[in-house]
Image (tube, rainbow over all chains, first blue to last red; front, side):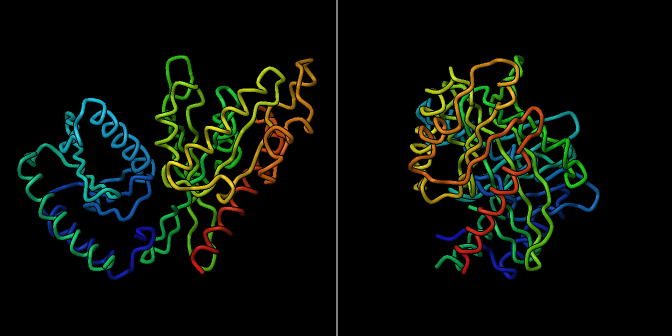
Length: 134
Length: 201
C-alpha cells in the first residue's frame, strides 16, 4: 500500500465529503492525519485559526498512546476518543489503520449527532481511498 | 514515510533526533528554534516532565522553501532519551524519513551511546526499516566540554564505536553553543530529500 501520495482528484473528493458532512454541520475544523503525524488534508469554516501542523503531531502521539493503553488492558482499541472543553471539543475517529479523522467543534453540536455524521463521512472516504488502492 | 500532497504541492518530511538520555537532542532543537526563528511559523511543542526531561517528544516544524515547485515542510522530532521510555520512543519513530543520532561525547557515556544506537536499529526493524538504508547522520555532541576539563572521548573512538559499520556522515558538535548544529541539520535534510526523490523516481 502506498498511502504516501494521494491524487489531486482524491483529495478534492475527500474535501467535498468533509465539507458536506461536517463543516456544513457547524464543525469548526476537520483534519485527516496519518499515524506518523502528517496532515493529509485540513478543512475549516474559514474562521478558526489552529496551528494544524503541531496539532497533527500531538494528535498522532495522543492517539498512539491511547491505543497502546488499550492493548495493555486487553482491548483491541478504544473506539471513542473525545475531549470535552468549556467551549470547544475534539473528537478522534479512526478511518483505517493508517488514517485518523479529527473534528473540532463547539458546544452547539451534540456529540451524538457529530458521531453519526463522522461515521457516514468515514464510509465515503474509505470508498474514495479503496478505489485508489485497488 | 513522507507525505506528499499533490493538490497543495506540499511534501512533509519527518526527521527524528535520537540518542541516549541527556545527550542534547532537545538542546539541538532549541538552538534551531532560536537561530531559524524567521522560517518557523509556529511554536516548538515540548512534552516534558516537571524535571524538564522529555516525556514524549519535542516537535518543531519549519518551511525549507521549494524544490521543483513543491513546498518542503520539515518536521523535527526528538524522542525521550531515558531507558524506560522505549515504548514512546518507538511511537515517535513511526513514519520517520531521516534520523540524527546524537551521541554524548563524554567518556562516561560511552556504553550508553552504543546501547542507544543498537536500540534504534531494533526499533527501526520493527517498522521494517533498516538503519543501513534510512538517511542517518551521527552527531558527537558536547565537544565543548573538553575546554572545561571534562573527559571527552576522542573522535576516533566515537567513530569506531558508532560509525565503523554504518559509515554515515558525522559531525562533532556542541548543541549548547550551536557549533555544527546547523551543519548537522542541513546534512540530514539534504540526505533525506535526496532519498525521497529517489523513491519517487
